[in-house]
Image (tube, rainbow, N blue to C red; front, top):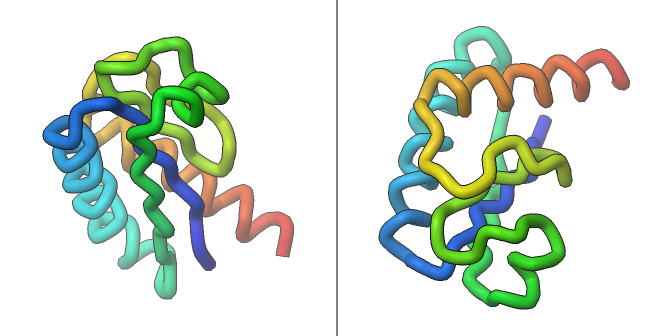
Amino acid sequence: MTIHVKILSLRSQERYLVRRLVLAALHELQTQFPGLQVEITEVGDPTEIGKCAQVLVAPSLVVEEAAVCLGRVPAREEVAAWLKQAAQGRAGSS
Protein backbone atom coordinates (compact mmCIF):
# COMPACT_ATOMS: atom_id res chain seq x y z
CA MET A 1 0.00 0.00 0.00
CA THR A 2 1.44 3.37 -1.03
CA ILE A 3 0.40 6.74 0.37
CA HIS A 4 1.10 9.80 -1.77
CA VAL A 5 2.56 12.79 0.07
CA LYS A 6 3.51 16.24 -1.24
CA ILE A 7 5.79 18.56 0.68
CA LEU A 8 5.33 22.16 -0.46
CA SER A 9 7.81 24.97 0.25
CA LEU A 10 10.09 27.38 -1.53
CA ARG A 11 12.82 26.60 1.02
CA SER A 12 14.54 23.27 0.56
CA GLN A 13 15.65 23.14 4.22
CA GLU A 14 12.03 23.02 5.38
CA ARG A 15 11.15 20.40 2.77
CA TYR A 16 14.05 18.28 4.01
CA LEU A 17 12.89 18.60 7.64
CA VAL A 18 9.31 17.64 6.79
CA ARG A 19 10.60 14.72 4.67
CA ARG A 20 12.49 13.42 7.72
CA LEU A 21 9.32 13.70 9.82
CA VAL A 22 7.31 11.78 7.22
CA LEU A 23 9.92 9.02 7.06
CA ALA A 24 10.10 8.78 10.87
CA ALA A 25 6.30 8.52 11.06
CA LEU A 26 6.31 5.89 8.30
CA HIS A 27 8.87 3.82 10.18
CA GLU A 28 6.71 4.01 13.31
CA LEU A 29 3.60 2.85 11.44
CA GLN A 30 5.16 -0.03 9.52
CA THR A 31 4.71 -2.41 12.46
CA GLN A 32 0.96 -1.76 12.38
CA PHE A 33 0.73 -1.61 8.57
CA PRO A 34 3.29 -4.05 7.07
CA GLY A 35 4.15 -3.12 3.51
CA LEU A 36 3.15 0.51 3.99
CA GLN A 37 5.11 2.82 1.72
CA VAL A 38 5.09 6.54 1.13
CA GLU A 39 5.74 8.23 -2.20
CA ILE A 40 7.07 11.71 -1.41
CA THR A 41 7.03 14.52 -3.94
CA GLU A 42 8.80 17.74 -2.98
CA VAL A 43 7.27 20.79 -4.64
CA GLY A 44 9.26 24.02 -4.83
CA ASP A 45 7.59 25.68 -7.81
CA PRO A 46 5.40 28.63 -6.67
CA THR A 47 2.74 27.90 -9.30
CA GLU A 48 2.41 24.28 -8.22
CA ILE A 49 2.41 25.21 -4.52
CA GLY A 50 -0.37 27.72 -5.19
CA LYS A 51 -2.61 24.92 -6.49
CA CYS A 52 -2.70 23.36 -3.00
CA ALA A 53 -1.80 26.11 -0.54
CA GLN A 54 -1.61 29.88 -0.31
CA VAL A 55 1.53 29.70 1.85
CA LEU A 56 4.65 29.60 -0.31
CA VAL A 57 7.68 29.90 1.97
CA ALA A 58 6.72 27.97 5.10
CA PRO A 59 6.20 24.25 4.53
CA SER A 60 2.84 22.66 3.86
CA LEU A 61 1.96 18.98 3.70
CA VAL A 62 -0.53 17.23 1.43
CA VAL A 63 -1.50 13.59 2.06
CA GLU A 64 -3.52 11.79 -0.63
CA GLU A 65 -4.36 15.16 -2.26
CA ALA A 66 -5.74 16.61 1.00
CA ALA A 67 -3.90 19.58 2.53
CA VAL A 68 -3.37 18.52 6.14
CA CYS A 69 -0.86 21.12 7.34
CA LEU A 70 -0.38 24.62 5.96
CA GLY A 71 2.42 27.04 6.73
CA ARG A 72 4.26 25.25 9.52
CA VAL A 73 6.41 22.26 10.36
CA PRO A 74 4.11 19.61 11.87
CA ALA A 75 4.98 17.42 14.84
CA ARG A 76 5.96 13.82 14.08
CA GLU A 77 2.87 12.65 16.00
CA GLU A 78 0.64 14.73 13.71
CA VAL A 79 2.30 13.29 10.61
CA ALA A 80 1.88 9.75 11.99
CA ALA A 81 -1.82 10.40 12.61
CA TRP A 82 -2.36 11.70 9.05
CA LEU A 83 -0.49 8.76 7.52
CA LYS A 84 -2.39 6.31 9.73
CA GLN A 85 -5.70 7.85 8.69
CA ALA A 86 -4.70 7.55 5.02
CA ALA A 87 -3.54 3.94 5.50
CA GLN A 88 -6.78 2.99 7.23
CA GLY A 89 -8.74 4.60 4.39
CA ARG A 90 -6.72 2.64 1.86
CA ALA A 91 -7.13 -0.61 3.78
CA GLY A 92 -10.89 -0.03 4.04
CA SER A 93 -11.25 0.53 0.30
CA SER A 94 -9.44 -2.68 -0.65
